[in-house]
Length: 342
Ligand code: KG4
Ligand code: ZN
Image 1 (cartoon, protein in one colour):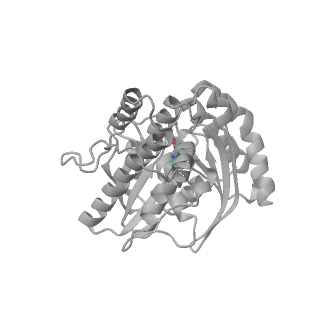
Image 2: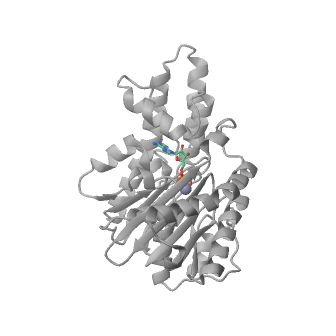
Protein backbone atom coordinates (compact mmCIF):
# COMPACT_ATOMS: atom_id res chain seq x y z
CA UNK A 1 0.00 0.00 0.00
CA UNK A 2 1.37 3.42 -0.97
CA UNK A 3 0.51 5.93 1.77
CA UNK A 4 0.95 9.70 1.61
CA UNK A 5 1.30 11.59 4.92
CA UNK A 6 0.68 15.32 5.29
CA UNK A 7 1.94 17.30 8.30
CA UNK A 8 1.40 21.04 8.77
CA UNK A 9 0.55 21.36 12.47
CA UNK A 10 3.32 23.81 13.37
CA UNK A 11 6.31 25.18 11.48
CA UNK A 12 7.26 22.38 9.08
CA UNK A 13 5.45 21.75 5.81
CA UNK A 14 6.07 18.03 5.46
CA UNK A 15 4.96 15.27 3.12
CA UNK A 16 6.10 11.67 3.31
CA UNK A 17 5.40 8.69 1.08
CA UNK A 18 5.63 5.24 2.64
CA UNK A 19 5.25 1.87 1.01
CA UNK A 20 3.56 0.05 3.88
CA UNK A 21 2.87 -3.61 4.45
CA UNK A 22 2.76 -6.16 7.26
CA UNK A 23 6.47 -6.90 7.13
CA UNK A 24 7.99 -3.53 6.37
CA UNK A 25 7.36 0.14 5.95
CA UNK A 26 9.75 1.70 3.44
CA UNK A 27 10.08 5.46 3.34
CA UNK A 28 10.07 6.37 -0.37
CA UNK A 29 10.17 10.13 0.25
CA UNK A 30 10.25 12.40 3.30
CA UNK A 31 10.28 16.06 2.30
CA UNK A 32 10.37 18.69 5.03
CA UNK A 33 10.28 22.40 4.32
CA UNK A 34 11.14 24.04 7.61
CA UNK A 35 10.17 27.61 8.49
CA UNK A 36 12.78 27.93 11.26
CA UNK A 37 14.61 30.79 9.49
CA UNK A 38 11.41 32.84 9.17
CA UNK A 39 10.46 32.41 12.83
CA UNK A 40 13.99 32.79 14.23
CA UNK A 41 13.83 36.55 14.66
CA UNK A 42 10.76 36.18 16.90
CA UNK A 43 12.40 33.32 18.89
CA UNK A 44 9.22 31.31 18.46
CA UNK A 45 6.55 30.36 15.94
CA UNK A 46 4.23 33.16 14.74
CA UNK A 47 0.95 31.42 13.78
CA UNK A 48 -0.08 33.83 11.01
CA UNK A 49 3.32 33.59 9.31
CA UNK A 50 3.26 29.80 9.69
CA UNK A 51 -0.04 29.32 7.84
CA UNK A 52 0.93 31.66 5.01
CA UNK A 53 4.18 29.77 4.50
CA UNK A 54 2.41 26.39 4.50
CA UNK A 55 0.15 27.68 1.75
CA UNK A 56 3.15 28.88 -0.26
CA UNK A 57 5.15 25.69 0.15
CA UNK A 58 2.77 22.73 0.17
CA UNK A 59 2.48 22.18 -3.60
CA UNK A 60 6.25 22.30 -4.08
CA UNK A 61 6.77 19.87 -1.20
CA UNK A 62 4.23 17.47 -2.75
CA UNK A 63 5.89 17.69 -6.19
CA UNK A 64 9.28 17.03 -4.63
CA UNK A 65 7.94 14.00 -2.74
CA UNK A 66 6.61 12.54 -6.01
CA UNK A 67 9.90 13.27 -7.77
CA UNK A 68 12.01 11.63 -5.04
CA UNK A 69 9.76 8.56 -4.83
CA UNK A 70 9.50 8.29 -8.61
CA UNK A 71 5.74 7.76 -8.27
CA UNK A 72 2.79 9.33 -10.04
CA UNK A 73 -0.13 10.62 -7.92
CA UNK A 74 -2.44 7.84 -9.18
CA UNK A 75 -0.32 5.20 -7.41
CA UNK A 76 -1.24 6.62 -3.98
CA UNK A 77 -3.63 4.24 -2.18
CA UNK A 78 -4.30 6.19 0.99
CA UNK A 79 -3.94 9.78 2.26
CA UNK A 80 -3.14 10.47 5.91
CA UNK A 81 -3.29 13.97 7.35
CA UNK A 82 -2.72 15.51 10.79
CA UNK A 83 -5.85 17.33 12.01
CA UNK A 84 -4.95 17.84 15.70
CA UNK A 85 -3.46 19.21 17.91
CA UNK A 86 -1.64 22.21 16.44
CA UNK A 87 -2.09 25.74 15.10
CA UNK A 88 -5.56 25.86 13.57
CA UNK A 89 -4.61 28.03 10.57
CA UNK A 90 -1.69 25.75 9.79
CA UNK A 91 -3.67 22.52 10.23
CA UNK A 92 -6.31 23.90 7.86
CA UNK A 93 -3.79 24.25 5.02
CA UNK A 94 -2.75 20.59 5.30
CA UNK A 95 -6.37 19.47 5.70
CA UNK A 96 -7.58 21.43 2.63
CA UNK A 97 -4.67 20.12 0.58
CA UNK A 98 -5.37 16.51 1.61
CA UNK A 99 -9.13 16.85 1.02
CA UNK A 100 -8.52 18.22 -2.49
CA UNK A 101 -6.18 15.37 -3.28
CA UNK A 102 -8.74 12.87 -1.98
CA UNK A 103 -11.39 14.32 -4.28
CA UNK A 104 -9.07 14.31 -7.25
CA UNK A 105 -7.60 10.83 -6.75
CA UNK A 106 -10.76 9.25 -5.31
CA UNK A 107 -8.71 7.54 -2.58
CA UNK A 108 -9.57 7.17 1.14
CA UNK A 109 -8.43 9.75 3.69
CA UNK A 110 -7.56 9.17 7.35
CA UNK A 111 -7.03 11.88 9.97
CA UNK A 112 -4.19 11.41 12.38
CA UNK A 113 -3.41 12.83 15.83
CA UNK A 114 0.00 14.52 15.66
CA UNK A 115 1.13 13.07 19.00
CA UNK A 116 0.22 9.52 18.08
CA UNK A 117 1.91 10.02 14.69
CA UNK A 118 5.16 10.79 16.55
CA UNK A 119 5.00 7.36 18.24
CA UNK A 120 4.66 5.76 14.79
CA UNK A 121 8.05 7.09 13.72
CA UNK A 122 9.19 3.99 15.64
CA UNK A 123 7.12 1.73 13.37
CA UNK A 124 9.01 2.79 10.23
CA UNK A 125 11.69 0.20 10.98
CA UNK A 126 11.27 -3.48 10.14
CA UNK A 127 11.34 -4.42 13.79
CA UNK A 128 8.33 -2.75 15.42
CA UNK A 129 7.64 -2.28 19.15
CA UNK A 130 5.50 -4.94 20.85
CA UNK A 131 2.47 -4.11 22.99
CA UNK A 132 2.11 -3.11 25.71
CA UNK A 133 4.73 -0.42 25.67
CA UNK A 134 5.56 2.69 27.67
CA UNK A 135 5.39 5.73 25.41
CA UNK A 136 7.46 8.81 26.21
CA UNK A 137 6.41 11.65 23.97
CA UNK A 138 8.65 14.66 24.28
CA UNK A 139 8.30 17.66 21.99
CA UNK A 140 7.93 21.43 21.90
CA UNK A 141 4.27 21.18 22.89
CA UNK A 142 3.99 18.04 25.02
CA UNK A 143 5.65 15.89 27.66
CA UNK A 144 3.60 12.73 28.01
CA UNK A 145 4.24 9.42 29.69
CA UNK A 146 1.75 6.79 28.61
CA UNK A 147 0.96 3.11 28.49
CA UNK A 148 -0.01 1.93 25.04
CA UNK A 149 -1.75 -1.46 25.02
CA UNK A 150 -2.70 -1.69 21.33
CA UNK A 151 -2.99 0.45 18.21
CA UNK A 152 -6.09 2.01 19.79
CA UNK A 153 -5.54 1.99 23.54
CA UNK A 154 -3.56 4.91 24.96
CA UNK A 155 -3.55 5.72 28.67
CA UNK A 156 -1.83 8.90 29.82
CA UNK A 157 0.05 8.27 33.08
CA UNK A 158 1.90 11.57 33.37
CA UNK A 159 2.10 14.96 31.74
CA UNK A 160 3.72 18.31 32.38
CA UNK A 161 1.96 20.66 34.75
CA UNK A 162 3.38 23.73 32.96
CA UNK A 163 5.97 23.96 30.15
CA UNK A 164 6.75 21.09 27.80
CA UNK A 165 10.38 19.93 27.88
CA UNK A 166 11.13 21.23 24.35
CA UNK A 167 9.48 24.52 25.27
CA UNK A 168 11.80 24.80 28.29
CA UNK A 169 14.80 24.25 25.99
CA UNK A 170 13.54 26.96 23.63
CA UNK A 171 12.86 29.43 26.48
CA UNK A 172 16.26 28.91 28.12
CA UNK A 173 17.95 29.38 24.73
CA UNK A 174 16.01 32.61 24.20
CA UNK A 175 16.96 33.85 27.66
CA UNK A 176 20.65 33.05 27.10
CA UNK A 177 20.56 34.47 23.54
CA UNK A 178 21.60 31.18 21.99
CA UNK A 179 19.19 31.11 19.04
CA UNK A 180 16.10 29.17 17.97
CA UNK A 181 15.11 26.36 18.28
CA UNK A 182 16.96 25.91 21.55
CA UNK A 183 17.02 22.10 21.75
CA UNK A 184 19.70 21.29 19.18
CA UNK A 185 21.86 24.29 20.22
CA UNK A 186 21.81 23.49 23.94
CA UNK A 187 22.39 19.82 23.16
CA UNK A 188 25.46 20.60 21.03
CA UNK A 189 27.02 22.92 23.63
CA UNK A 190 26.36 20.41 26.44
CA UNK A 191 27.78 17.50 24.48
CA UNK A 192 31.07 19.23 23.75
CA UNK A 193 31.52 20.63 27.28
CA UNK A 194 33.37 18.14 29.49
CA UNK A 195 33.75 20.22 32.67
CA UNK A 196 31.71 20.37 35.87
CA UNK A 197 28.14 21.57 35.53
CA UNK A 198 25.81 23.48 37.83
CA UNK A 199 23.46 21.14 39.74
CA UNK A 200 19.81 22.01 39.22
CA UNK A 201 16.95 20.03 40.73
CA UNK A 202 14.19 19.39 38.21
CA UNK A 203 10.60 20.01 39.27
CA UNK A 204 8.62 17.14 40.87
CA UNK A 205 11.66 14.87 40.79
CA UNK A 206 10.86 13.35 44.18
CA UNK A 207 7.16 14.13 44.43
CA UNK A 208 4.97 11.27 45.71
CA UNK A 209 1.74 12.95 44.60
CA UNK A 210 3.06 13.73 41.14
CA UNK A 211 5.07 10.56 40.73
CA UNK A 212 4.76 10.55 36.94
CA UNK A 213 4.08 14.22 36.20
CA UNK A 214 6.67 16.78 35.13
CA UNK A 215 7.24 20.48 35.73
CA UNK A 216 9.73 22.65 33.89
CA UNK A 217 8.87 26.19 34.94
CA UNK A 218 10.77 25.91 38.27
CA UNK A 219 13.88 24.68 36.46
CA UNK A 220 13.64 27.63 34.08
CA UNK A 221 13.43 30.05 37.01
CA UNK A 222 16.33 28.32 38.79
CA UNK A 223 18.54 28.83 35.71
CA UNK A 224 17.45 32.47 35.51
CA UNK A 225 18.19 33.14 39.22
CA UNK A 226 21.52 31.36 39.04
CA UNK A 227 22.70 33.64 36.24
CA UNK A 228 21.42 36.74 38.06
CA UNK A 229 23.02 35.81 41.37
CA UNK A 230 26.33 34.75 39.81
CA UNK A 231 27.29 37.47 37.30
CA UNK A 232 30.47 35.59 36.27
CA UNK A 233 28.71 32.31 35.76
CA UNK A 234 30.22 29.87 33.28
CA UNK A 235 27.84 29.64 30.35
CA UNK A 236 28.56 26.04 29.33
CA UNK A 237 28.33 24.86 32.91
CA UNK A 238 24.83 26.38 33.30
CA UNK A 239 23.66 25.08 29.91
CA UNK A 240 24.84 21.55 30.59
CA UNK A 241 23.40 21.71 34.12
CA UNK A 242 20.02 22.55 32.61
CA UNK A 243 20.23 19.70 30.07
CA UNK A 244 21.21 17.11 32.69
CA UNK A 245 18.31 18.13 34.97
CA UNK A 246 15.75 18.37 32.14
CA UNK A 247 16.59 14.96 30.67
CA UNK A 248 17.41 12.94 33.80
CA UNK A 249 13.93 13.41 35.22
CA UNK A 250 12.41 12.04 31.98
CA UNK A 251 14.68 9.03 32.14
CA UNK A 252 14.11 8.34 35.84
CA UNK A 253 10.31 8.58 35.72
CA UNK A 254 10.14 6.39 32.60
CA UNK A 255 12.32 3.74 34.23
CA UNK A 256 10.30 3.92 37.47
CA UNK A 257 7.12 3.28 35.48
CA UNK A 258 8.78 0.38 33.72
CA UNK A 259 9.81 -1.15 37.07
CA UNK A 260 6.39 -0.60 38.63
CA UNK A 261 4.41 -2.07 35.72
CA UNK A 262 6.91 -4.65 34.52
CA UNK A 263 6.58 -3.25 30.97
CA UNK A 264 9.96 -3.57 29.31
CA UNK A 265 9.16 -2.06 25.90
CA UNK A 266 9.87 1.66 25.85
CA UNK A 267 9.02 3.82 22.84
CA UNK A 268 10.40 7.35 22.72
CA UNK A 269 9.32 9.98 20.19
CA UNK A 270 9.11 13.72 19.46
CA UNK A 271 11.72 16.40 18.75
CA UNK A 272 13.49 15.97 22.11
CA UNK A 273 14.02 12.25 21.34
CA UNK A 274 16.96 13.33 19.18
CA UNK A 275 18.75 14.64 22.28
CA UNK A 276 22.19 13.04 22.57
CA UNK A 277 22.22 12.78 26.39
CA UNK A 278 18.75 11.21 26.45
CA UNK A 279 19.72 8.68 23.78
CA UNK A 280 22.89 7.81 25.68
CA UNK A 281 21.01 7.26 28.96
CA UNK A 282 18.31 5.04 27.47
CA UNK A 283 20.46 3.10 25.03
CA UNK A 284 22.91 2.18 27.81
CA UNK A 285 20.16 0.72 29.98
CA UNK A 286 20.11 -3.05 30.20
CA UNK A 287 17.02 -5.26 30.56
CA UNK A 288 14.62 -3.08 28.54
CA UNK A 289 13.81 -2.78 24.83
CA UNK A 290 14.38 0.83 23.82
CA UNK A 291 12.84 2.13 20.60
CA UNK A 292 14.15 5.48 19.36
CA UNK A 293 13.54 6.83 15.84
CA UNK A 294 16.41 7.91 13.60
CA UNK A 295 16.98 11.64 14.35
CA UNK A 296 15.39 12.74 11.04
CA UNK A 297 12.12 11.10 12.11
CA UNK A 298 12.15 12.63 15.63
CA UNK A 299 11.05 16.13 14.62
CA UNK A 300 7.86 16.74 12.63
CA UNK A 301 7.70 14.80 9.34
CA UNK A 302 5.24 13.29 6.90
CA UNK A 303 6.56 9.71 6.96
CA UNK A 304 5.40 9.20 10.56
CA UNK A 305 1.93 10.46 9.54
CA UNK A 306 1.78 8.04 6.61
CA UNK A 307 2.88 5.18 8.87
CA UNK A 308 0.25 6.05 11.49
CA UNK A 309 -2.47 6.29 8.80
CA UNK A 310 -1.47 2.85 7.50
CA UNK A 311 -2.00 1.23 10.92
CA UNK A 312 -5.24 3.17 11.42
CA UNK A 313 -6.51 1.89 8.05
CA UNK A 314 -6.11 -1.64 9.39
CA UNK A 315 -8.68 -0.67 12.05
CA UNK A 316 -11.04 0.47 9.24
CA UNK A 317 -10.95 4.07 10.47
CA UNK A 318 -11.57 5.98 7.25
CA UNK A 319 -12.80 9.59 7.49
CA UNK A 320 -15.32 11.61 5.52
CA UNK A 321 -14.39 14.85 3.79
CA UNK A 322 -16.24 16.84 6.46
CA UNK A 323 -13.60 16.30 9.16
CA UNK A 324 -12.48 19.30 11.20
CA UNK A 325 -9.19 20.48 12.67
CA UNK A 326 -8.61 21.04 16.40
CA UNK A 327 -6.01 23.15 18.19
CA UNK A 328 -6.01 21.89 21.78
CA UNK A 329 -8.81 19.43 22.34
CA UNK A 330 -10.75 20.02 25.55
CA UNK A 331 -10.23 17.07 27.89
CA UNK A 332 -6.56 16.62 27.08
CA UNK A 333 -4.44 16.11 23.98
CA UNK A 334 -5.92 12.71 23.23
CA UNK A 335 -9.59 13.62 23.83
CA UNK A 336 -10.69 13.51 20.20
CA UNK A 337 -8.62 10.44 19.64
CA UNK A 338 -10.59 8.63 22.34
CA UNK A 339 -13.87 9.67 20.70
CA UNK A 340 -12.54 8.65 17.34
CA UNK A 341 -11.54 5.19 18.53
CA UNK A 342 -14.75 4.37 20.37
O1 KG4 B 1 8.32 17.27 17.67
P1 KG4 B 1 8.79 18.62 17.29
O2 KG4 B 1 9.49 18.77 15.97
O3 KG4 B 1 7.61 19.63 17.24
C1 KG4 B 1 6.54 19.61 18.14
O4 KG4 B 1 5.61 18.80 17.90
O5 KG4 B 1 6.64 20.35 19.13
O6 KG4 B 1 9.72 19.13 18.49
C2 KG4 B 1 10.35 20.37 18.47
C3 KG4 B 1 11.03 20.56 19.81
C4 KG4 B 1 11.62 21.97 19.99
O7 KG4 B 1 11.22 22.48 21.22
C5 KG4 B 1 13.14 21.72 19.93
O8 KG4 B 1 13.88 22.66 20.70
C6 KG4 B 1 13.22 20.32 20.51
O9 KG4 B 1 12.12 19.63 19.97
N1 KG4 B 1 14.48 19.63 20.12
C7 KG4 B 1 15.40 19.20 21.01
C8 KG4 B 1 16.46 18.66 20.24
N2 KG4 B 1 16.12 18.73 18.91
C9 KG4 B 1 14.89 19.34 18.87
N3 KG4 B 1 15.44 19.27 22.35
C10 KG4 B 1 16.54 18.77 22.96
N4 KG4 B 1 17.58 18.23 22.30
C11 KG4 B 1 17.60 18.15 20.95
N5 KG4 B 1 18.65 17.61 20.31
ZN1 ZN C 1 5.69 17.29 16.75
